[in-house]
Length: 71
Image (cartoon, rainbow, N blue to C red; front, top):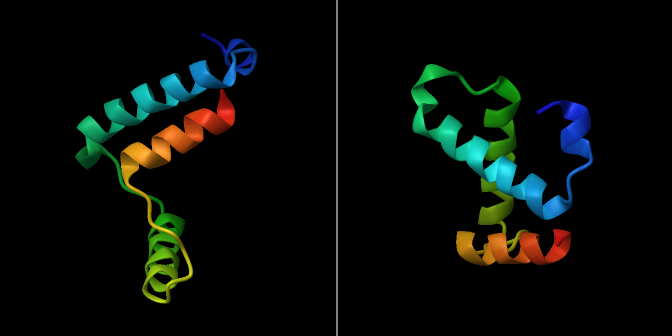
């Protein structure tokens, strides 16, 4: 599938592809290194969470909200 074909897919199909790609990458997470910016983003999120500045959602609930937003 080409990038042009991916762009033409509806949002729910794109989300399914993203989930499948993420599951595949996560299964072999030791084979690649996260970029430096990712560690910084995680640190900023931890600080915001500790300060009560962000809402925490259960992963299943977060997926429901994302699917509702993009379907």
